[in-house]
Length: 285
Image 1 (cartoon, rainbow, N blue to C red):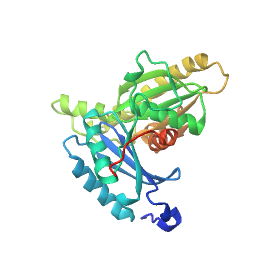
Image 2 (cartoon, rainbow, N blue to C red; image 1 turned 120 degrees about the vertical axis):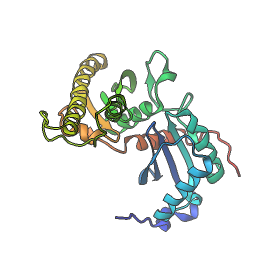
Image 3 (cartoon, one colour; image 1 turned 60 degrees about the vertical axis):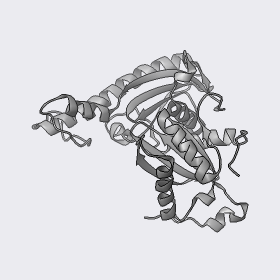
């Protein structure tokens, strides 16, 4: 069902009052529009590094038109990306179509998170944003799992310290590798297997991919929870929050995930924007 927005109810007299947030992953770009901390709309695009700023601008404009909003309603933009080549493109799009330099998640931005990685600059922006969002919504200590192109595990304490985590191949990468690196195995849909002992090649692959990934997630989560509980020292229960496109599929067959939150990264971007909203950034006007 198409969602409608009463722009008059959003204090139209105040001018530009919406926040546009971009979460750029290796496979998909998820973007959302916020009004006063409420996520109004969200969309998912394929990540294509060859697109220009104008092409992204036209795509976003069409998505906006369908929902009855326009660039004239956007007051600011924030970007988190693990694909550096797209960053400049979206920054240029923001400046040209919104009239303001976007806020970018990276070194120097305020998150409230203390990072204990050996080299904090190596922590992906998405991992930082997810951790901040999960802590602000659920409190710590937490294991935050993102089931994207890679499946990442982040350990964060109750006092907002990022300890580190693990990175494993995502379930889709594993599926693509089986198809691309073998002569006879087909490409299969990633869906709930009917049984572990399958009777044909496609279902055998589904069994191995889905059940195998669930097993990896459950095992790593158990190890990380034990280490995190000892390092956190608060005595609080370690909870597990999962996000990303495959989170529901993985969570359905395991009991190690407490919460599936599909919009976690976008909400983290909104949180970080509010923490940095008065940053000195030049506009185009």
